[in-house]
Image 1 (cartoon, rainbow, N blue to C red):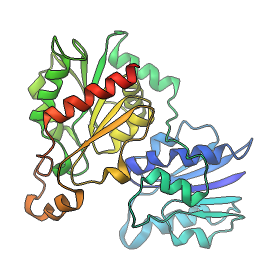
Image 2 (image 1 turned 180 degrees about the horizontal axis):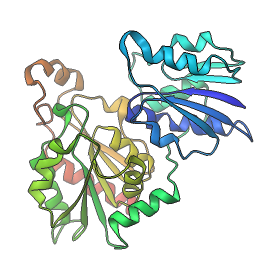
Image 3 (image 1 turned 60 degrees about the vertical axis):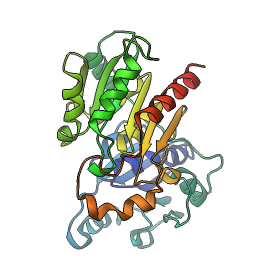
Length: 318
């Protein structure tokens, strides 16, 4: 089966599409799949058996990225095209079958909506294909200490939806002190390239002796292997939140101006805390806050996050 799978340019949305890719792989004993995605998401597809090519879509003026993709795929006769971008390209290539997803207006989780659009039942969970090489890379970074590992991901693609660094530090202290549920745990700070400034208050607040700073320092899939070893991951709504959940780590997501009904973490053990104000009300204030970090997350208290973290740890432990 030769298939074209067009997914998101954004990391989080691409991770949420991996269950659909897994279902597509299962349709054939010898799948030959081409994945089209954004550069930041490309690493999650490069270790997948059955994916023979990953085409990165770097956005260009006047839709140049779509023209480049069309040039790369128009010469192939596809058995199936799965298009999660709802693009016109799907209808301009030769294909025996076409499955197209367009984001609905009504609330609903993206994973469920993709499954419904593609006729997938049961709904396939997001997953990651973490290689042995990535696990060895994680072992080099984290060592062989079998003790508990707490990961916090204090970054986001838009600073106002990131919880404040000071609150992350207070949360870490509560969870890891002598009476905390992760007493004595090592702490990892996770983030991607270019996100060091947003994570800096957490790194500085904890100090280098108390945390392992991995912000922008390791490849994405090595970071995913590190996340898979965590006893708990606490993350802003971000691509790394979805990576952690898909890697199987107990993952607690923090939401303010984004909608947990659509983007809550999906994985074996997940939970979320949101600000008291609805996401749409917080988004309406976006013009007032510019790019000030944490500006729309003030309603998310440390007490609420610590309580949710304890509940999630108990569920995961049971």
